[in-house]
Image (cartoon, rainbow, N blue to C red):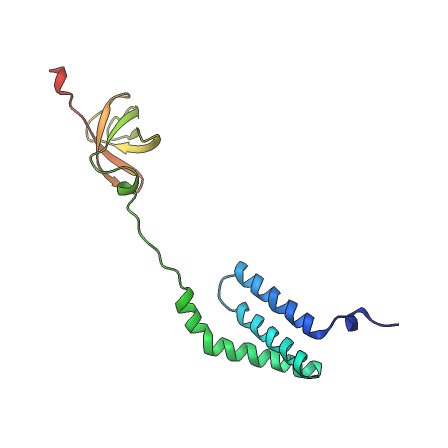
Length: 156
């Protein structure tokens, strides 16, 4: 009786192990499994070129993995290191001086809500502002807008 493991070529097993390492690298951070994938592909290449024993395949796998890990990991981390870009939310969504409408009464020190561009924002003011009034945006702190009531010139 022939075992099923002998029917699968060793080069294919090493190749599939390498692909598995590359896929796992996408799921797990750290840039470590990538080099074990390279080691598996190195062992697969050795098996394709030369008839080598299992122990030699494992040694080749470990040597290629550790060598590439030592030589290339720091370089790859510099290349693939992410950087954060700070975006000023006020400039992108609600420009300073923008006119908004109060949708929830603002009675200091409590805040309320304003609507600008179809979006609702938490808002605070030094003066009470009733719902339905228009206000001007002075500044923002995270996602809270500081506003002031607009004085209508035609009401005097």
